[in-house]
Amino acid sequence: MIISSPGDYREAARRRLPPFLFHYIDGGSYAEQTLRRNVADFQDVALRQRVLKKADDISLATRLFDEALDLPVVLAPVGLTGMYARRGEVQAARAAASRGVPFTLSTVSVCPIEEVAPAIDRPMWFQLYVLRDRGFMKSALERARAAGVKTLVFTVDMPVPGARYRDAHSGMSGPGASMRRLWQAATHPAWAWDVGVRGRPHDLGNISRHLGAPTGLADYIGWLANNFDPSISWKDLQWIRDFWDGPMIIKGVLDPHDARDALALGADGIVVSNHGGRQLDGVLSTARALPPIAEAVKGRMTILADSGVRNGLDVVRAIALGADAVMLGRPFVYALAAQGERGVTNLLDLIAAEMRVAMTLTGAASIAAIGPDLLAR
Ligand code: FNR
Image 1 (cartoon, rainbow, N blue to C red):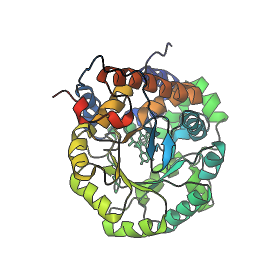
Image 2: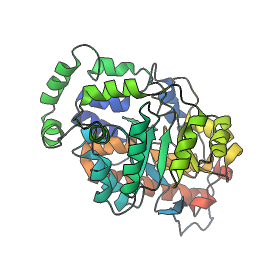
Image 3: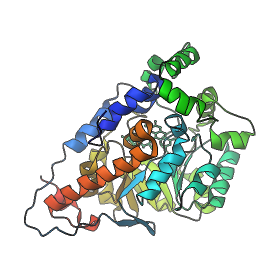
Image 4: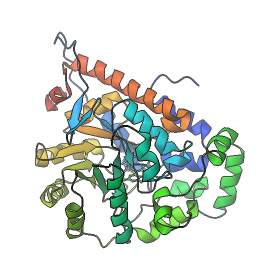
């Protein structure tokens, strides 16, 4: 299949992956309204075209938390990435490093911290969930620190998992799921050989090391369901702030009040995010949630945004709406599933090329020059 745009990778991933994995990635919660709006609302943001602005020397470089980035993009934490491509976290991290952007390892990755960090020549970021097992949280932070992680992404929008109805239809969960998954693997032989056989072990690397026993997909679902902690409040985050001396980013903020609370806690940044429309369906899209949050905290903390960014134009739009940089979720996962590391590097190149055109035609020669005045009202 011909890949000419970032959007082509979704179909390429659909062809390659067993349906239970494709729909796990692709789906959102409940009626998937927020998932759809995330994408549509970015598309609806109109940019002001400006001509003859002498934008011949475009720079996409930026800095986040004293780290130099060649592109204002960070790969978002995505669970089970090692199921979408062989040792997928390592491949994605290598692609990100080769294009000068950070990769964020999820708590629930297949490859453990100790496998991914040494595979790249820049510090990776690490994402942690709020979990009942505080011993696990502490030891995960210690392991991350020992592996050279400086930037911690603390995800707070999953005190309970949102219902993803697609998963029951696709065989990810529900009755007879394991037989259905086996059948789907058998009928997707390229994936089965590359990832199913050669990509082993398929456990949750960070968690099985902590438990001292191998974990599988069933444990993933069970462990997560039992370990999310709805009793958590801002007060409980203080120990993590005290424990972690590097940059700490709170991921999953959609409201200006919560952004201010994150600032008061001493967080260095937030990710304006609705978890890619996978948690509370019906909440605001990122494109709509971002401007009032930027108004509340811009300049006092770093603002990242994700959920619905699909291409280079969306990156420019998100920055114009108030973000300092974006996180990419599904787009990099589709590219990884379709073509591994090569797919992710190509995706980042496509996004950079699209940004250059958008910046030239809006007269913004640098990331710092992208602001609300690029928006057509
Ligand atoms: C996620 N996301 C996520 N977030 C997180 O903090 N920890 C995690 O383990 C995961 N796992 C995960 C799995 C899959 C398959 C998806 C699609 C997403 C959310 C992710 O970091 C990010 O917020 C969204 O993916 C952004 O939305 P887009 O770019 O996918 O629209």
